[in-house]
Image 1 (tube, rainbow, N blue to C red):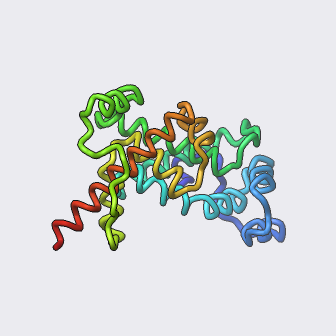
Image 2 (cartoon, rainbow, N blue to C red; image 1 turned 90 degrees about the vertical axis):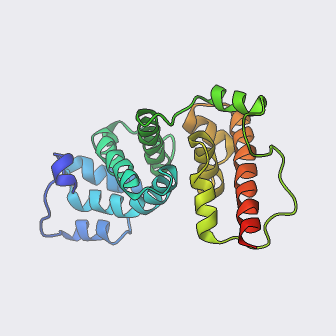
Length: 213
């Protein structure tokens, strides 16, 4: 797939002992990137892809509201943008965090084109003026049982800004400071959006539970 879009990745060739070691997963990200940059080694790029594509796909699928075609486009565009920029990566964060930041930009662009993107100020302002339908405090008691499909639908129904913060914090394990750097917002904004996102998810799950009775 990437031979067509990333022109400098070489086509498969017989693996050397070093390339086989890369394929086995024994090398770290930095060693794999160095090997790729040194000779456009496909084994190194393939090892990087296999290591990071699954978590990128998982996150992209949630950012895309469960729409697989959009998630595939986000993941593909992430690698297309990342490959030629690997030589400029400074290792000030993990490679995965850097890839996720690119994926977030891709998802934002798609949301903007689709007319779904709203600024932080718009989302927070709407909530402050009571436009948001969900409560801003955690409802209690919570649902006694949660079906995975109901939880996925509740997350997919969130506004894009809320969904990004919830996915990054609750599913990917990033701190609010890290989310702030990834999204270009204050950590307090991340905390506020996570609180509202969780409240909306819980409210939707409670509604789903009530309707199923």
